[in-house]
Image (cartoon, rainbow, N blue to C red):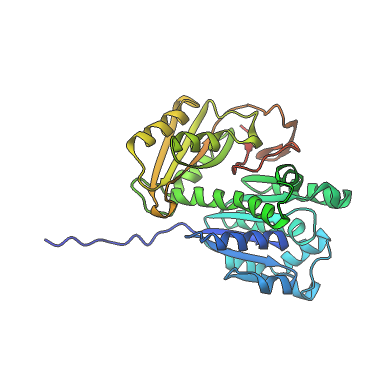
Length: 355
């Protein structure tokens, strides 16, 4: 009797949306990294900048308002431009299950447009994560104030947010490092976040999970955390775990007591011992009765590298010591305000939902 394999037509759509100049540059860098199984969409009010973007899906925002000449650093223009083009954007995002939004805060298009796009993503039913940058201090108080307002607006609608202070780039950069090199390093946060989460739900593996696992876990109450670590060589699994769960951005936040975890291991030639080492090390951080779900993807293109992604939730009422304990109540969600010393090395986001 012949065995007939039936292809599963049901898939999860992941959209990566870059808004404005910084968001568009991030899209370009990720496209160069050859990230698979995601849809790239670039939105901008600047026609010339948009024309040069490598994204296959590009939308010029607010043509009637700006004539394709940009938002002039005015977030209100950016907001109105996004609203003018909302039907085009809706069509591009329709059917998205998970949306990552990348933008630079402080200018016009990203600051004003990102909250509009995030709200649209939520209306379409997509789990929405924003990854945004803050201006350098030398850019002045006006841009810093605009960035702060934009981030507050984003926090009201997204499920999670990563904020990257550009000042941190100055602290981390070697004296001979170019701006382009350091901005690419910041864009790696978006890349590894998307790649790590997508690995759970889109890449066929020895043990893989679907989007319902991610959505269910991230809907749990309490602190939520995402981290990804990459390592190679001896003890690579242990090193990758440490990079994933001990992010300098979250140095005062422990995932101890987490009631739910998703663990994904990606690499070539993953051994049983490495799987055991990684899972055991992470499990020690969780509550003894935690619901732990894990997946594994074999990817020969990674060579000697291994990547471990951790999503933890239900951490409880821990409040990071280094985080301003003033909590902004956004209805059903409360967001911690991150400190100026945020790190960049490993992608992570924090969100806390009310009981």
